[in-house]
Image (spheres, rainbow over the protein chains, first blue to last red):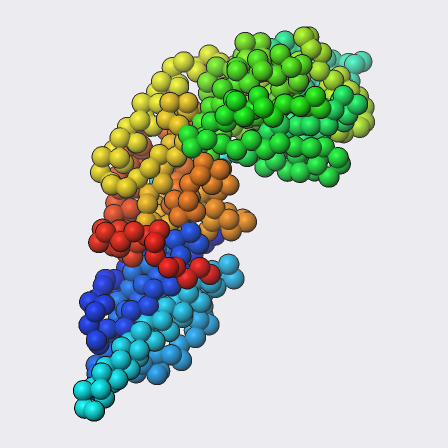
Length: 138
Length: 404
């Protein structure tokens, strides 16, 4: 199977590889997939608490080249978006951008799931903080 | 050194130029039908076929009359299993085979099950060998055939063929072996190994594709088969169809070369294979050899590189041709059933690479491959959340994954 140039580009020069402190209140972490299925994506967003804008995104992926490319592209898409805008990112956008063949669509689905998981994690942290401060104020 | 490098010699091998030279005249000048009995064109073709038959027979210690030419090992396996099951149906209907057999055997067994046969699929031990005690206990008074491959195409593990053959002989059960990966690579002797039927393929031993052979024992016992292809009664009535003269000439020549050069070649390939293994194991942590190291083809190496996925490795070494047990590289989207039969977790099956070193590989190529493998695995581990977690001391088996 031939890979698209964009998949090759992301595979050869993955963007935003790395990890951020998952205990930080401004960092949301999503980990999806399973080793026995052949792919695991970890995606992290760092959100500016004042503006709600994603200032940084990082990923690490165990999986095929298309899975690596999908998560690399996802981090690029996330930067500069608000958390609510990030939730609007659909897997089809990744499919089109990377010209993924049908057998690789699940890689894009996984990337969408990873985005949602990271944002959800961030939001639940915020919620907990809010709850805490309410308790304190009360 | 020329790129890309071919290191997938279990899938197929390049045709040896000496084999091609032997074949060429039979495409043009000597084009006769080996079954034409009344003119020199036919006689020449027949002579070439009979020479090929002797060459194949010599490689495995058989008599030329015991060689049936086929279109390849898939046909040989089909003919052996279906031919025996149908011919000996009155004697019994039970077949014993192993979980790690090639699909040409496993799917044929599935087919026979639908026709009323009972099949026992022996599991593998962790080293890839079958358990002889379990085989012993699997025989019933209905057992007519045991089919166990000589050497495995993925992990290169060589089964205790001689012992299996002896156990079958004692019980008067026929013994078939798929010898595709072993013939021409390690000594195979149908007499000493007590083999009754053996499948051979041309293109796995530097011969042409589209030709193979089935050894069918003629004495002690005389094995009979029900033909699966009806027609002109070629090949002692067991396999009708005009003989593939060029293919047979090529297969024969390939067998003769393999026989003459096996001792030298297996030592040379083993040294290259060992150097590849040593360098990978020295420069990388968390790599695991799949299958017994001791009972193994000299040119096979099958390694799992933990925490990196097979297809992504193949993508990183796109100037090297090897195979992976990863689901992403298979038509079925399932990881290798052979590796799973070893009891390997799916994660390590996804992380496996099979190297098959061949006659035309050089040490320079193997050194290059070793270097590239180390490089790509290190790079991908930098990308791997699993490697990171493992390094942090997280027990990956205890993590709640979201299977999809």
